Image 1 (cartoon, rainbow, N blue to C red):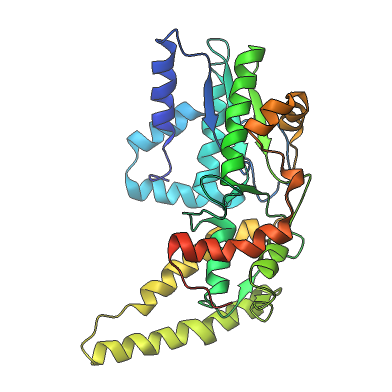
Image 2 (tube, rainbow, N blue to C red):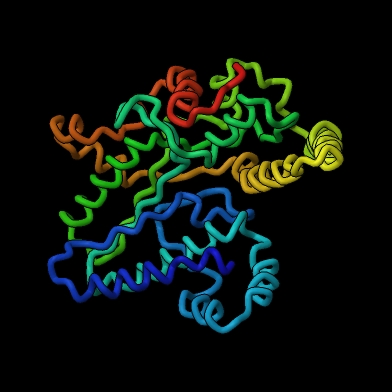
Length: 319
């Protein structure tokens, strides 16, 4: 919790913007998973009221010790995948309270992935989300990966995401609405699942690693990864080398834990607002800031993702 209370900076930015009359709008970049509670199956383009008001959360972060915050987090996070999504929800609500004083927009991108064309095709610098999973599967670092075949990835290429952000910001300024405008940006109208993305990127070579049973996945991870890593670190200890494999296991396990909700939640996301914005653009503007995800051929796109990982992240893929 103490690491995720980054909404303080957003609060400060909003207050600074109120003193600057030249600022046309405040655009908050959130995430499409800002209300991705375990009990939620659909994300609409609206503000969701948080279970804790922003002022309460900030007071708690200032008044409680780290241990007290951690204890409170364990109780609070039962219906949330992580503190990141929770605090995004709270910050969105806080931004909305300023709508009578300035134009407010909230941009919610899906899972940001490799570039389509800018700055270069397949350009990538992130190990988060589906890209991190492809790296684990493509390098065969994991003996098992648990995923629901129906879980949508909501992938959005990074350059198209930037274009969508620019366009939605312009839309907020142009409309001068007194209501906060929400822009969900996902591939909902041209969907691809995590599973299909994995299969395409690895040329179906990771199919033996994919597991659909939670308990069988846990057994495979324990027997085929944890135990060998323990023995390798014991060997390194007795040969006067610094143990490293259990630390690697912890990092991988942390990533898998963070991905668990998203890999196994068939979440539907509405994205009508940006669809309407796209339809309203002139052809010149569409060529200038392309962000229409319907035109993406996901087979061609994910086939080239591993080459971008190798070229721009210097990670050797074994596919």
